[in-house]
Amino acid sequence: MRVDVVTIFPAFFDVLEVSLVGKARGSGLLDVRVHDLRDHTRDRHRTVDDTPYGGGAGMVMKPEPWGEAIDAIVADASAAPIFVFPSPAGEVFTQATARELATAEHLVFGCGRYEGIDERVFTYAASLGRVRMISLGDYVLNGGEVASMAMIEAIARLIPGMVGNPASLVEESHEDGLLEYPSFTKPASWRGMDVPDVLLSGHHGRVAQWRHAQRVERTRERRPDLLPSTD
Ligand SMILES: Nc1c(O)cccc1[N+](=O)[O-]
Image (tube, rainbow, N blue to C red; front, side):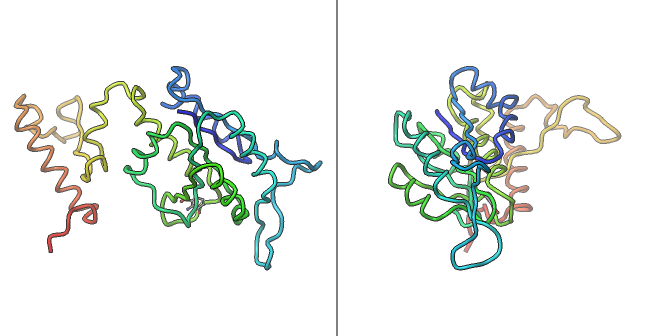
């Protein structure tokens, strides 16, 4: 998978070199390219924003640099990309979204700042590929970089070969609608707290049963919205 990121803070994505994604980059599973939007400006001040038509507070990201950045990315792309623009006005990102996007050949993340990107950029991008406006959640961030980082990690780890033991992807929270069970490791007793006996029993059937029951109980307590409605 190829992932391009367009941002005015390219250094923000340096961390991808050290994370899970960094390992995949080295193995050829993932090709991540970060682009500084300001490299696609034409003026001395490398201007990327301007005042909004119609008035209002804040600034809007100019369409010209975005158009040039998108053209440069698409120029050497082997397939029509999916453009992902993190936005509070987007569909909510879920594990199902991550699974879907993990099958894409080419993703382009466009990180907006200020009051957002000129709307014509999304229209232009839609002429070159699929456009998805995606939100991490109902809260306000200063831009799309944090959201893009989270989405890239959630997506990249689902690419076959990315995670050493694929079985570890199975009983994770949100993979099958239930939250994950509690985990324990040595020592068996720590500061007066003991590991549940069933986990020391060596009885795999009972362990599996206990873990499932814990997942249902946790989901009921913390995320009842994930459980099928009983009415
Ligand atoms: N919520 C938010 C935002 O305020 C700005 C950019 C991206 C997001 N988001 O993806 O959730």
